[in-house]
Structures are given as C-alpha cells and as structure tokens.
Length: 128
View 1 (cartoon, helix red, strand yellow):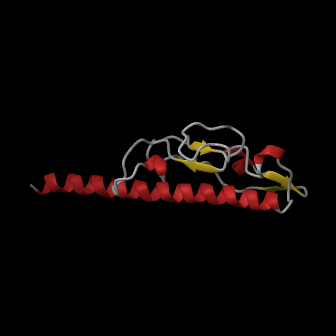
View 2 (view 1 turned 60 degrees about the vertical axis):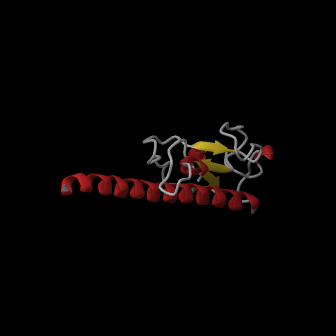
View 3 (view 1 turned 45 degrees about the vertical axis):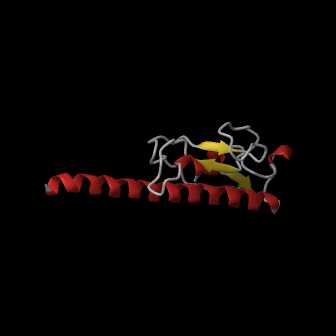
C-alpha cells in the first residue's frame, strides 16, 4: 500500500522539479535577450535596422558579438526544455501577435516552451 502511494508523490515531485527548471531556463534566456538589447541600445554593437536591437536568434546569444575586439556573450548554452526534452524553444518577435505560435523571424523578443502540457497550477507551459 505504501508503494502505491509513493509513486504519485514521486511523480508530483518530478513534475515540480521540471517546472522549476523550466521557469529558471525561461528567466535565464529572457535575461540574456534583455542584456543583448540593453547593450545594443547603448551602442556597444550594430544590429539590423528592423530588429529593434533584439538578437536575430538564440544562438547569437551563445556565440556572442564583437565589442571593441572582444567577444561579448550573453548565454552559455541554449538549455534543453525540461518539458519536451529538446533544446527547441518557441520564439516571438516584436512584430508577432502575443498569442501567436508562429515566429515572424525578424528578431527574438521572447521565448516560450513548445510543450502543450499543463502545469500543476493548471496553466499551459507554452504560456509561461
């Protein structure tokens, strides 16, 4: 009887930990996007005219940009989405509709999970 009760508790704990990782990964990537934009707004490097100083993709945050002969990096690596098990994330540009799941491709303004799963609080992961 105890073994039967332990499995749901373990599953709950695993899901809670995965959700914690997802929140952290989203925060980390959004923070990197904001730091990139802040540096571009301050004139540290040039960006495309229609990008509104946001990065063209997540890989640019990892690869970095040249600033006065040095590489300025904003993200160590693109994390794996704990809900999908892939390092693939939904992207939004400033031109995209806030509820859109299609990336316009101009620049990365926001990032979200591609998981259709439901969180412990009843929200969808792809809305976080």
